[in-house]
Image 1 (cartoon, rainbow, N blue to C red):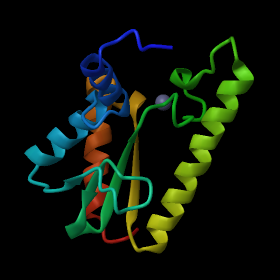
Image 2: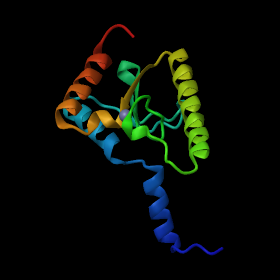
Image 3: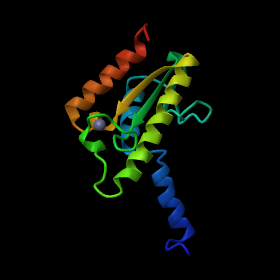
Image 4: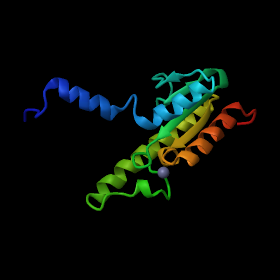
Length: 142
Ligand SMILES: [Zn+2]
């Protein structure tokens, strides 16, 4: 069946879905940059394509959408009422991949920090979350 969108529109839509520059990642990047941290984005060479890579601190950060990455006990991760089995399998697959990528990264000597999207919604919580991220980046222990 022919695509209802023009190729230009379709690629615009798809690029938004694949999300190189979606909201929550930008919030974290902007904050770190303002605090003087320098980093790479979406490093394809590393397992799981971390959203933020800080080579100097041997640290990677994933900014996870609660639904797609199955945030436990989070209301934003609730499965749809229809096609629930399909969604559960899909999300469980994502979670398995995330865990495997995180394990590989740790084995390669990277510190892995996960930032959940729900922690960035409220201004005060967001600030506290980002401050904790910075503390972890700079901490001597892993
Ligand atoms: Zn969440």
